[in-house]
Image (cartoon, rainbow, N blue to C red):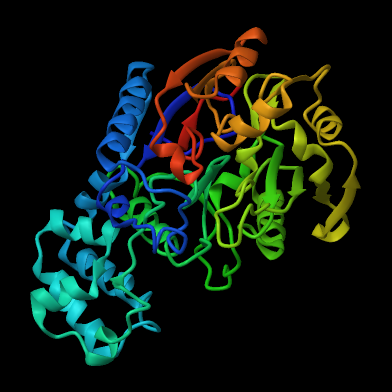
Length: 414
């Protein structure tokens, strides 16, 4: 096992995934927007869909690590167990009274390991804590606008986001929104303390320094080659994050160019998740010269190229067309552009909403994709791409596809 991701398409060796669990059973019509969902999934079917994906990855020779299993190994150490309880509770310090916060920590310390993993992922409501301890403060019980003592991490199934492997290093994220803010904590503990990860040799590009406080989410991160990183710039990934990453990568890795894709996350109605949460909702690399993209995004993108200037300073260039820029920096002789929807504007919009662009490449020209996106999958096959279809009707209800669900840890170099 090693941490090495120098492309989006190199043959996949190892990944980290998180199966749907208690956290998605917390979703209701009143709270789903606050918990960053646009619809309510069928939990049992969502788990079946995910288990089928894991099975197919393993049949292709990929080592699959599941975060709940890894975390359960970590908390066998009582010191680490108590640290995680205290750090998890600390996220709620501004939302709960000290009395309730203390009662929650004591309760969590008394449950077994399986129950604790469920609480880490699925949270705990005020009513649940009250029924177990009768120690919830009146002020908290009377605050009906805040139903949880510990917020459920309803999006943790999108394993791409809490961290991203870039080259021989990891960038730990800082997540957008209350429902996601704790996710990187647990991934950090896995990398730092799990027996299969703690002795690995890798850089940490972001997320360890106390100064790393601006947003970063892994679905905006695209290692395109040893020398080129693409990264999305929107509400989920900040300007200061990008500049720090670029500087650190150019100093200690082979990265020479960072392409910054600036875009807005279009909201259909106020409070929804949005159409373009991350870059991988509209763009993916699927083969050496082939890219899948949502055609209506092209005019909405601003593309910048960051390179190392004199004295280690970052130099910025405003680029034009994204694909001409990719052709230049990746030194490609030609490009094969595959459109979501296969040229049909209506199907493009419908299937983009169904995560058609969010395919996951496991080796050059081989992708996992949701079977519901029939026009796009047909277009991929017409362009020589092998499409392994997955059932994903329940998983797609939060606008996440196979790429969102998968954190690559190790790919073969091209």
